[in-house]
Amino acid sequence: VRDLESDLDLMCEFGITRLSGVSLETDAERSFDQVAALAEMAGRRGVQLMLEFVPTRIIPDLPTALGVVRRLDAANVRLMIDCMHLIRSGGSAADLAALDPAIIGYAQICDVPLVPTNPDYLDEAVTERLIPGTGQLPVAEIIAALPPDVPIGIEVPMMARALGGVGPH
Image (cartoon, rainbow, N blue to C red; front, side, top):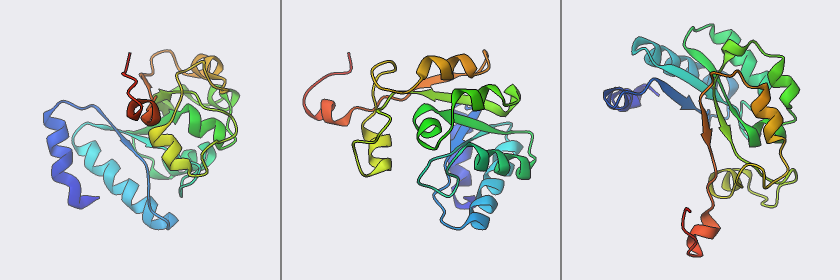
């Protein structure tokens, strides 16, 4: 992570205030060390680190991500909630509603079928999601469970449609 510190400086020149991070490490302690280093680098620049959990990675679910955030004990680290990852990892809107609202810093809204149609989870996450309300996730309940001031992004990559000539509209 430290090798990319100049990239963080460049992002700060563009005015970022939040940075999302996903650990791709396979070792839990190395993952923690890397997230801690990123949190420290971001904190020195006044940037919030949004930790994202992904079911197929070392930080696979909400409880694990909460454990990492608590262990870091850094004022600038919060959770990034992705609808797909939350539900597919066994979480729920009720789990979000039970959290201290201050721990959630960002949310990504999308929709997908409850049962994956693509055996490659990350491929589906990066290339094929649905418009909110067109899949099977409890999107409205998740949004209602989020703190009202949390920024929300729409995460709807549709690679197959794009390659088929369908435009963004």
